Length: 176
Image (cartoon, rainbow, N blue to C red; front, side, top):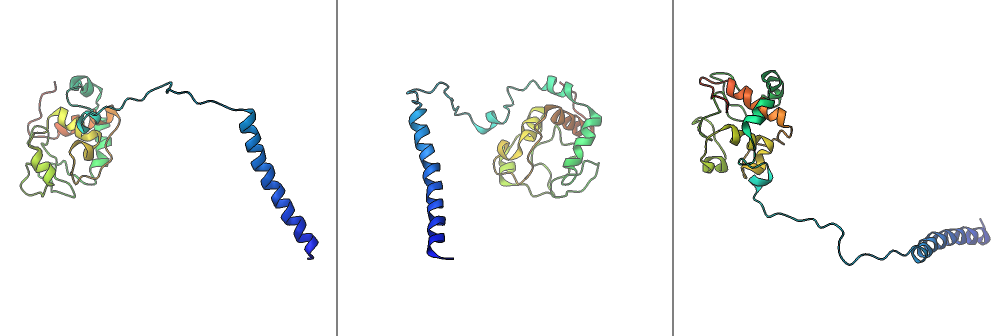
């Protein structure tokens, strides 16, 4: 290949770059758009705590939520939980604690399971509202928990699992 061929290739590449960048500059001049001084839509950021962000306990009508639930659906959704938890009476702890009779008992109450410091310090009991808030996104509801689960975003799924857990108990709590 002689130098004339190389010059043609280099010239072609330069022309392409000039055309691409030239079209961009010319279109900026022809179609000039002025940005407004103020935003047309302001996004307000709340400074709420993580519990309020994850579905505050006070804002949930738990009776209406549990009315959406279905025990058969809860048994199906429970399969996600059964990889780490046992729900049978006398069931052993797995990666997570056994959850037989969990609704109504204190959080971090099993003596034969090593809970995270966050769970031990939380100091409440598993009510329907607490369980609902926790199941939305466990790691943001109780910061520092060892539970690596994304959560149940659908209300029907949470309600069904809560009903299923309440049913698997020596003394199921009455529904609100």
